[in-house]
Image (cartoon, rainbow, N blue to C red; front, top):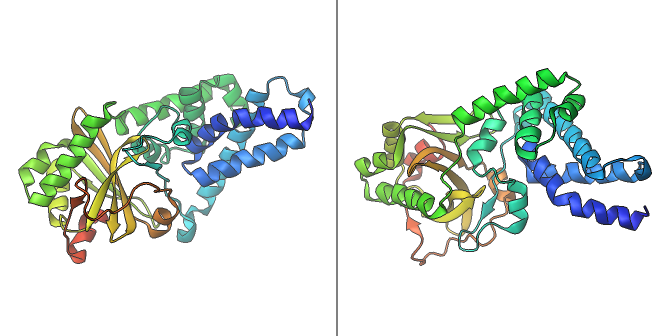
Length: 316
């Protein structure tokens, strides 16, 4: 196999490898770095000795990601090095970008990524590789240097946590968006009962931050009251797809400053994840989502900044 053929085969595998890396790491930039490192390692390897290039590349990318996860945990004591999950944002009018579809790997919703971030690196790797990409436990066990039985148990515990904390959102995007629209319409009108009606009784709002665990609000009434107190916060919010599910991007004038991701199950919001870290928002690909001041699809929210922090910043 010459270098050109090797490069062509690698490029055919790149979308799958990026999807594996994004699900393990939760960052597009880090996923791309992991895949590029895999390519460099492949160039230094005798390809003739590789039985299955796809399996070999998946293993290499997974090991690179595992090292990155462990390094991230080592740095977690330093606030400046803390990490936030990186949402993937798409314009709902255009649908999910094909490149993003490959990254999402059929498991939509940012809530899943949030839960994955609570797992140990080994449990995260075992769950993602087996449950999302059907990698056999024997192969994952070799990567983790653990027994297949232990690896199976890691994945099982992770599966239970995901099932309990990140239920899959409704598949119908139109119905998802209807719940999000109703949420902001009720907030705009100051209708507490209408807000509670679109929220699951056990809804959780998480405002993600770099300096610790997310600030949270629990329960429909408390989340609704938080939304009421901040109903005039953002001049505009625009509908968006966040990791393939309904959400919004909030704008201050022409500048996006927050991403709100909703998990909608049975026509009720069960989770709202708020990302408003300036550094994170600045690096997100928000092409196609604009403030468009006079668009009919824009929901206007007029909020005093002093009140706004209660919900958008996630404070109780």
